[in-house]
Length: 400
Image (cartoon, rainbow, N blue to C red; front, side):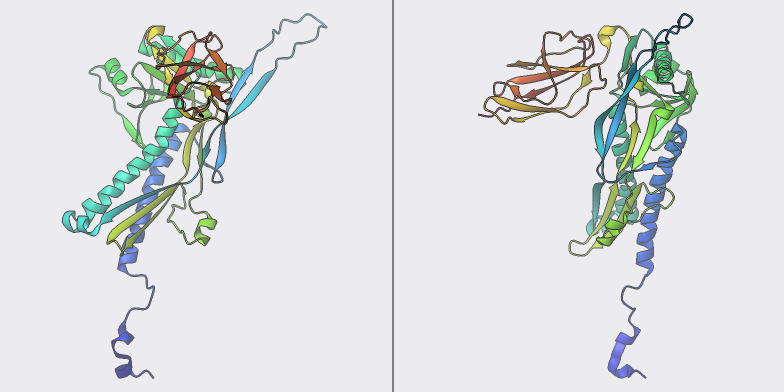
């Protein structure tokens, strides 16, 4: 038997690593975070008709596709050879999907002053909303790169033509659109409906109306420029994710709570006694993705002069040779028929949508450019008729 007098109070102490009330509360917070995020995401996937997320390895390359070709005439005389209709599918590296890491900390003083609910729970909700925005912002950025461009005089006609263009594109690809999704600006919707009462529903932070103006679903967002309509077939949309519960992470001592039903996000909360703060960590690799860029319609409302010019993100670093700069463009060409053009000048060159840039210097998007230090390099993505679709500008950094 133990000598209680010799052992003293140690005999009544809680065993090491015991799961107590504090640990249960932390775990409940983690479970609530990942399940509510997963459920919100799943609602959006259900609306878009995406039956399942496709698991990808961390760092996997994402590729968009464009289809080109012409249907040959079927008017063939008896015994003559039937002409071959040839279609090609070109894959272009668009981006990669990888785990991103996020952290939030709440101090002991903040909890003492404002209470646990205000300091921790409310900031958890705000962070969850921001993480949703990370996913949707990347998605909106891709939607704005749609290459089925055009313009219509009225907003309603723009929606009709956007739907028509994407359905026609899928028919040419020998695919059937399972439905169409349309994205419009919030103010445009209310200008159209006036005082009429509509009910907006929300999924994963995206507001929508079902069965509206000929579309299966219309998303309403301030992320879409005014007087602009974007559309794509529902079955052009895919969802990818990197598993945050990867066993390799666990082996390294990085164990995150995940929702077994979805597995979209990993979450972990712990106290940091060194700094007296409540730390929370989230990891996520989720992408909503349009497989065919040339099956996304981007229609402007008004005259062709008011069509929106897209934006290119440029960076310039010193080239490998004297007097040269290495310019990189973050975005890819939206169509295999489009080309890069550039102009060097002492000041930024103004570009308008549809502007003719045929006389500008052609560029392959890779080669270093001979330039004068501190001059401006204006890069344009032009269509097959050399009309400007998107542009960007950067100050040249040149090797001395």
